[in-house]
Length: 271
Picture 1: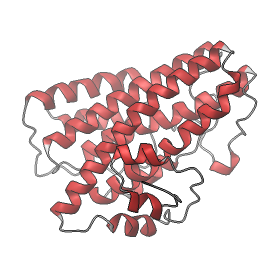
Picture 2: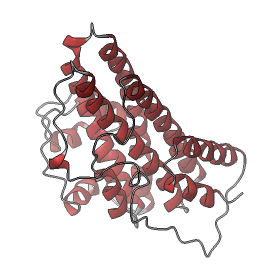
Picture 3: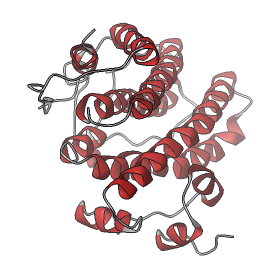
């Protein structure tokens, strides 16, 4: 089996069932076999995200405000925004396997498991969208995560630093803040359901950032680099100085960040 052909098909498809089927095939195969790569294999750099035909892509500043959670539409805009992050994360996890073929088998299995998790997260949220009378693609989205993957397409170390260890770690900061905003509406069964699903996602995303942390440190060791190269990479991609108002110290520590790193990212305290 050529898993790279399957991965490419999964990445470019906008059908979640196809993505799930191909991801499962790749995970089963990698769990039972060695994977060889043809010398002629060159991973493609994808010009557009797989959701381009399904969603209207806009500048992040043009996204609708998400605040009126007491209405179906207001709650749907929030669910849609989170579903889009999960959908994007599917392709990023698959791309991490597809693009960096020289990485160990344990790395491939880790990111295929992450892709399976992200598919499940997306489907949980998509079900909620349908219950609210909407579908994925009914609201505009931005392509920030796709751009991050495109910009880090050539360097595995940069990919691990920027995607799981920066963007996904930022999700650990944001998720509890969303739950906090929703908490006083918990009597609404739809809001309660969303909070329950956000809690599931939150716990599993810590594990995803842990995987990114593990492989970032593996690559630092392999390339003879100090781990504080992380901050050089953030500066290179102009994301070091982005505002981080609510660093989730405990979640980041569980995911592998040191207190020194957490403080350098902006936390006042970390013990």
